[in-house]
Image (cartoon, rainbow, N blue to C red):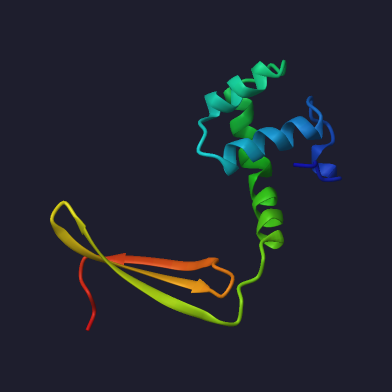
Length: 115
């Protein structure tokens, strides 16, 4: 992930590329703060998990907004899938709204079916 030319990175001890990589790893994959710390340490970057947490709190929303803007827009045609599932012997209904490109727009799962 490329680092933004953002003045909010000014004054930080680490370069913007390292901060953006750590924040991207933490929010993109189901990794703990300590796992991100270990991955950076493997690459020779010594940073604590507390610092990664601070970066996530400080820069996470900006990264999320930028990623959301780059997502493809939902198509004008969509359809609704309905699936009946049994989980531990209890019947559940799963509905998914999918556009023509196969992108999942919304998911709803309930233990009762509204009539």
